[in-house]
Length: 151
Image (cartoon, rainbow, N blue to C red):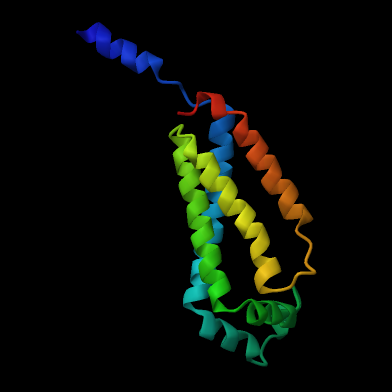
């Protein structure tokens, strides 16, 4: 009887180190993006008020607050909510891939491609998505190498 249970345990594929690294990197990137977009959505009016104050001299030394303010205003509050939802779907896809479920790569890929299109839809069609496209494509390609061991 113990032999039957031991055989079932041995048949389950183990998670390769490369997949572990990819999942951890994706958890970190998508998780932090989920948190930051959700936070901006929740404090959106206060966020706009903060950048409209004249006491921005210290912040101005590191970046131009007017550029950030125009980005946030043109994107609108719904942009940050939808982006947070897409990052949640991305994290969910990574969770499934961590557990060697094949549908995770589909969730991850769809969410990441939609995230590439979000700035084009909400902000400006003139923005370049090439850097994001290269990084997203590389991660999807690296994840696809592990499709054989996923169920």
